[in-house]
Length: 439
Image (cartoon, rainbow, N blue to C red; front, side):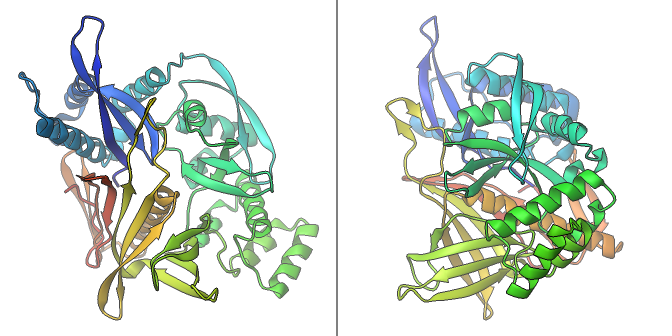
């Protein structure tokens, strides 16, 4: 699926010889990722094309005459689409040409040289592991280093991820974003401008039944056990009083297996909880607490009369969603480092046979979108395993790899500036066949 890349702002610059050029500020999941020139991206595209051939998305052409304002906007829009579309191919995402370029521009943007550093990785129980890495090490590489240190089986790395987490003085925390495999955690942490932000290790799957695949690895069980306890302490998971008493007894016995088995029955186990936000359902301005997991978005909505209502949006009734940034980005010092102000996620949902838009205003809109995409991905894999006759079309190096399927899922992202609004991402979940395609 496409990633949340966008270029909402660019700046005119002058080089040492007096020549003028445009510097594009590229954001990933709402955070400034890098600043690049068109010429850098053009050379990168040529390198990718030598490796992957004509399967690459179209790259915006060179202009040999001065660009008008409309031409500049069109190029920025085309570069956005290119960055989104080039991430669809998982083979390309893992290639040395792809990762190598993005490593260099991250280091260059934030004026950081490659050197050895120590990085603390926080576990769900509050402890931290200090790892020795390079500033140029990707999140994928850092995760490998951490897994080796704690004894986590290499084949289970895909069930975990590194996250940017904000810790508060009252003991609460917010999961801000999952770090992409090609991100440099050392740089992402330093540049995020998140107060008391840390890099944390958490499981990265939203289907609680997937716990069963990890039970033969002691380190994996330790991690999901720690997170289960943390989620109960933070009241992200909501056991009944009877369940709480049983879980406390099992925790005292340190019976991790039975604890995790019982946790499967607890409300919101394995979900990601977002910070308090607002929504327009059933009317604008209502407060909301969102928990996302197990193919649903569970909302506890506070009505204007302070009554609460529990509303559940099932993913199989979601048609599409989009993340939109409302506002401006430039300040006196140039582009801001985050887009977390004035973000909203708009969800098109089928209720009573009618399509309706549900709007959530949250600084964690990108995380929410990533969770929705993760649930779709897990469902696709599960259905394919259950029904070998399904047909799934996944573009692979310019070709469609065909399996059999009963449902379709389209993933497409667009960044359309309209006044001070910028559409960040749009994903169509589709009701028909599960199909991922590049539009």
